[in-house]
Length: 531
Ligand SMILES: [Zn+2]
Image (tube, rainbow, N blue to C red; front, side, top):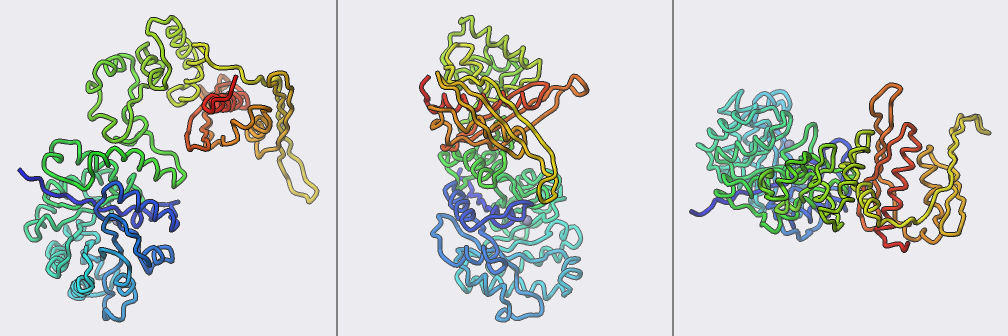
């Protein structure tokens, strides 16, 4: 039986741009649009031309994207003629393949927010769709607050949707703008709508305010909708939009959907999904959510030893899909519960050859267990585990020794009468036969120590030039007087590779020093610095 086509519409650059703290530049928008097109997304909504300079500029030229590039804006304002509406004019002038209008479909909003009549609202939908069709554009109508509107006044909500369809809109998109509708309600209401408008002209736009935006999208599809709108990583205001990164693999890999629908994302494109998701976070300069379904670092991570040995034998025993299909990888966590099989699997993953009967493997497991009882967490610190393993197996060179370090923090009143805190670190390092001393100021003790450590490593300096610290996290364990401090440091190098190192001590400077040292030594090994 031929499969039905289901379409994906991405609004990361429009609705996703409403996220607190997200501010896309023109270059960001272009790069993300390209990435979405490469992923096989059918429609990419670029923004709201006329509403802000970035979006106006974005739509001023044809970018030749391999997707239906879509402009978003409001329908004709009530009480105005089309020719007298600059918003609609900007939309019609935009270099876009499709235009997505947004209109009210809740009678309450029409009265209170628009202060107009139901008839004028419907006339505005008709005029706007007709004008965009006359310009040769594919047209979509977002019915704002459709589900709340339908519950309040189904006749009016449906009349808004039907007006757009009758005027030739390719898609009528039902929006759960406030995000409070539940999946069974979505399924029921969409089921009513498709009796009036064919499902292959119906889209769903769900917000995540009850954490069911993805479920609501699937509920709409089950009821007949054939377009899903969403964003990368569920970006969007408040709790976000439906997450396409979760929706796409479910459509591709779950039999109920894979057997019924074709989407624009090929199997090869699906393999890029993890990378696309992480690339968006990189661009937003925020850490990726390690718990994200399908693409998170932990999505295929397993902890207990008994599971790890089963996974080594037959991965399907503990995995709902194969991680490679979405470009992710299996991760076996080294943890307190770790068995030998965990350690062996992890060693294999980081490329260390080991024989399972090698007594040093048992020794490594002992060390990991001992250290985890005092607060180390190697599953969060891949590079420190790598070093620990190589050290236990005897393959980490002794590049340099830190003979001594000294950190001082001074608070005083400066010459112009301001209270300032000055931090200075001095580090004595022995590299081969050279004794080196470096001093550096920093905005805090850890920063000063880091600066001083990396200022002069003699003949090794050139190997660590590209190293930078990207994140620093501190956690106090146990509490009270027994407290120890766990420091996790995330580093990055000139190739964009990232790794995490760990330090644990009663003293925060000491803990930070351990993590800093691990990061530098890891980088030296990675760069192939000679011993
Ligand atoms: Zn929205």
